[in-house]
Image (cartoon, rainbow, N blue to C red):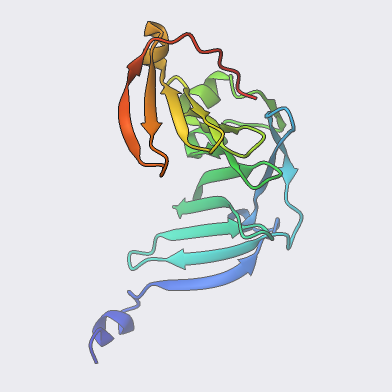
Length: 198
């Protein structure tokens, strides 16, 4: 049988399904949420049985756990190596928009508290996103970089964007679409736009 020797040697990939369980370090999950004023809050851990957990093990014995909430959103991916957890958390607002991604270098340093997103640990290691009242991403901050601002027209098309380098020069990138939404003109302008992340 093709692959029989591989499988009989115990080298096949495996998967299993659980719910979160605070009695086991591998199945424990911290609880994060976003406030209405876009702050990140870490507040204890999920109660037992609140999350669906999928555990996969590859052919080399590396374990990965994926935690999903009842809306099907991934809230944590955990890699385990030598009984150590390396956690990446995903934090959503009330509308299901992903607002924070906290890689292991960020999540390992956060205690139960409220964070504005301007803390050095989050500035250096977290991915931060903000949305307007129409759930359009208007602010994107990647680890160690200045944020990118985005402005849309009434048809939800991205028209202006600005990264940190452009901000220091007072420049914006622009995209002009035709009536069918196809981009027909792009460029750089020096307009003085008033930007607010609301």
